[in-house]
Length: 134
Figure (cartoon, rainbow, N blue to C red):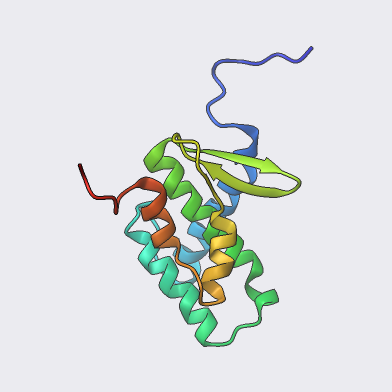
């Protein structure tokens, strides 16, 4: 029987996305001199970088890993702002916010590259930052 400890802070499903996000932050800092600070505002820069890649007609195969990192980064922004958790099944990763909704920031990064998505807007929707107050 396995032992579960109450000190485990992140679910096992978070391991890969957290690493992908950290790799994206390091790559942007070292290669592009862009600082990503896990804030919702930083997703403006990420959306612009993805848009630039698309406009330059960069082949998808050449940016697949970068997009995965950007998607994981956006997921980490949402996790840190809402207390959401990473979930994984069959090699796919998504986040579940405390209200029970599921979000797929990795797919959203791919949609952004195709010209049909926005990591900034995904974060806004997932965190409720754009919701009117009642």
